[in-house]
Every structure is written in structure tokens, then in C-alpha cells.
Image (cartoon, rainbow, N blue to C red; front, side, top):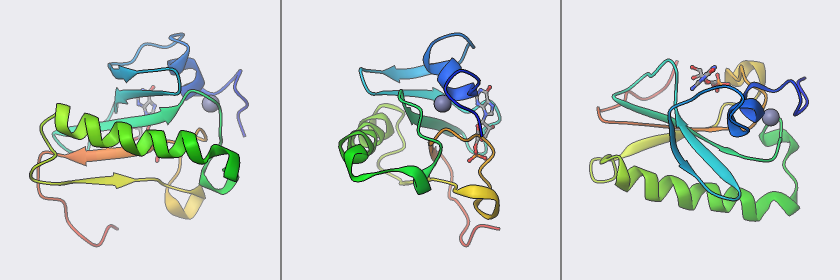
Length: 117
Ligand code: 5GP
Ligand code: ZN
């Protein structure tokens, strides 16, 4: 599992790899997914390297809460708030996680099917 030196999303947070950044503050970064699955599809990550939801601790609660507040604001900003949208956190191999730096997908701009595959 990647540490912060080799981690793709740490590199995006440090601007070592380009991304279409939507928002940045002291704790998190939001950027458009490179392979969007909906008209609006962005990812929100903490700047600090946390591999996934299984690894969060009570000390991370403030950071994770801040990410959810940021998602609410960015949903408004990208125009998907009113019709609704989906927030997804994939965990591990059965969950479909491919990048092991915790990230929240935000998808909107069309009606999304349920249940997921
Ligand atoms: P996961 O499958 O881990 O939940 O989601 C990883 C997401 O990261 C995928 O939706 C994938 O398209 C996106 N992704 C992978 N590499 C890059 C990249 O280099 N830049 C951006 N913007 N997104 C990426
Ligand atoms: Zn990382």
C-alpha cells in the first residue's frame, strides 16, 4: 500500500501531478475525476495521507466532517445540489477501491441508478 511519497492522490494534493482542481483549503482538495461517470464527478480528499475508511481514527473526525461540509458547498457550486447527487466512498477490493488514499466521489447531473453493481 502506497505511503505519502508514492501515493497518486498525495502527488495531486502537492501539485506534482496535474488535476482539474475545484477547491483547496488547509485540510482538503477537490478535483474532477479523470474518468467521469456522470456529468459532474469530482473527488474530495484530505491533504493528509489516510489509506481508506478502515484506517480512520477518532482523531480524524474533524477532517472527515470538514470534507462532508466541503461536499455540501461544492454540490451547490457545481449546480447539482437541488436535484440531488451521490457521495461514494469505496473501501477495499470488494468495495472497488483502486487508489489507497481515502476519497469521496461526488456524482451528479443525471439520475443515478440504484442498487449499484
Ligand atoms: P476508487 O476506484 O479508488 O474509488 O476511485 C479512484 C478514482 O480515481 C477513479 O474514479 C479514477 O477515475 C480516479 N483517478 C485515477 N487516477 C486519477 C488521476 O490521475 N487523476 C484524476 N483526476 N483522477 C484519477
Ligand atoms: Zn496519499
